Image 1 (tube, rainbow, N blue to C red):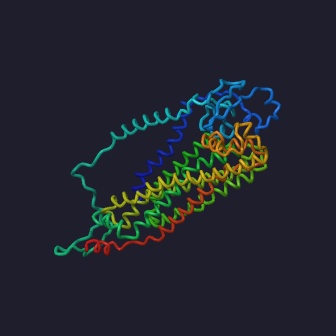
Image 2 (tube, one colour):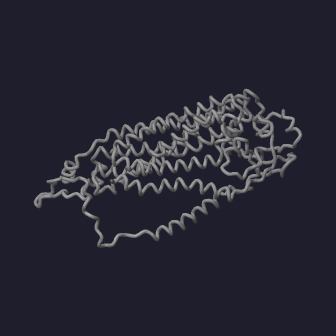
Image 3 (spheres, one colour):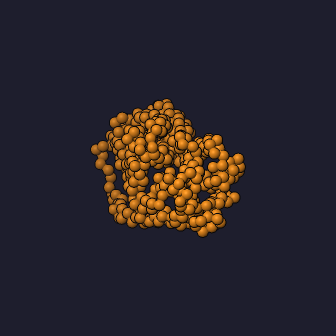
Length: 469
């Protein structure tokens, strides 16, 4: 039962991924220090950058000046704060997505260089903890005695034999023997099965990495905005832990199932991830539709079914991602024999390495493309509503494209801040930023499923004879 054995060994990766988020979250909360809150500004106090609030007129606001590089400092005529202090403006949406509980002062102007995220100390603490656990675990690792040999009860009686005068295979009763298998060089250069298997791993892994990278962002960017009472930082951390649990279960469960279902059929089952990933944008769009008439934070009841569907579907899809790699060693042994399975497995894992590069880079490009388009649309909406809004809040003209690009690059001007300037009823484009990513991931996973279905079993006896010619 190769699949079960591999799954037991690799499930440790998923178990660590399940435990780590909660530990890191606890460390971050413990070490985090809130940045210095200076006060509210025009953008965060009046909504839309218009001085129409009576309450806002009773309290002084921080006046900001935008530098040539797009960053902001406290203006010389500001009634609050020390002039020239570098600052960042945090809106309600920014505070809602804060990972820790250190910020309790709400939206407003914060001094750059003050406070501590706690991330560096958390990672250092996690490194010490991992080192201690690794050192303890190493004391329990032992190698077999040199005279030990495995029991022969489960081993095949008949193995490949060669005639003394010929270097060809004459009998092949048991292909499962550890002494039987095609050389790695032959498999990678002279079989069709290897490139098909390689692409099946690459496509599924790239889609899985895209989902793994964007799922928490989708949760915090989309669902936290419409149901903040449900999607809290603790809920988000639990979601990441659930993804780790799903990966652990996938590594163990799918590898064990493959012993019964078959490796090729198990990989075919991973194709169920295609509709899950492909329909993620639909769930996000549906959430926007059902909450469009609700006040902020009051749509939790209507969001709940969509949230749970997204939650459960993404965890299920991550089990497929975990199963890809736990089933792969047994899949290789079944196709090409056990003898050189380790070397072939190493070459097949280049698909995983390629996906680790292509996945995040592709995700970053697609999201950046969608983000730029959304910013352009929002800028046009703000200009049509109030042409002077950007000048009041950021000190730049909406027609000065170079200055606006600098603001965007410096993260001074974001979708969240433009939504504060946009007219009431403007649709937040954040839920649509991940559409192209999900569709591309679903397309790659579909191609991977087709590639897997094209794999046919090899006649090892024929291939071994061909290799020895």
